[in-house]
Length: 93
Image: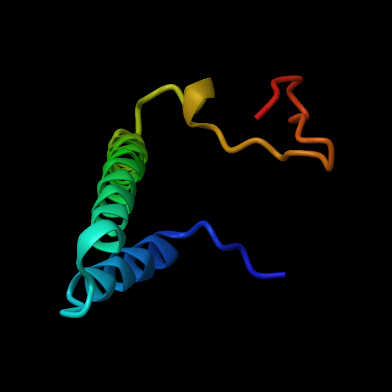
């Protein structure tokens, strides 16, 4: 089963929204709805991209510092989540 929460998927959503906004026949309330939707997508995308940037920066810093403590900070660790949504570390995700 393919995961649908990748940065590639985000990129596809952003371009799809751009195409919808470029529809010259869209006007009135449907246009207003699409603009609200685009605003929401943009805000969420900004958070996702910021999170990915933080993780990437941490990974680069971690790999570039051979003398560092090899333990990845807990907040950056990827936890295996069980079917009920609870991680093996006991934290609900």
